[in-house]
Image (cartoon, rainbow, N blue to C red; front, side):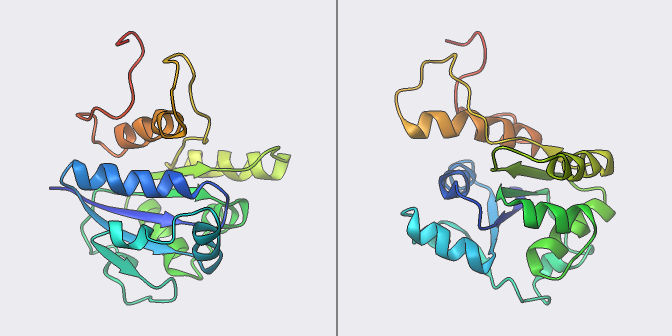
Length: 184
């Protein structure tokens, strides 16, 4: 069993985090969840107030004593989704002023998998520059851009096209989330 951190920021797109937690559980993986304060409000507004119940462990964003605030805590990667541009900028500039941004900083310094799923449009040059910086530092940027070639029948099908890529980049390639190209 793997151990994964899921960070949720205040960007719209709570369904991405909710479904990732569902998939991690189905795959028998351990999940550690941290929300920003704005994320809690957005999750409730978008209809996912029960998301915390899907995680194995939930932490307050101010809890710097959470295990994954330290590089000595062994885990298999972190996904920040949806990722607001404010949180992305803090991560890109090493501003670990919350558990979420500290955990992402630890991933970068320890060379662990860090997946960022930005949810913003349009993006300014500053947004793009921050994403390039994170990619240069080793993070994988997977925009919340769903695919349509598999003829999705639901919102969940669309979301899962992005989450399939997230799972792949977390090292969980052996999953059946979404259809891969030429498997239809």
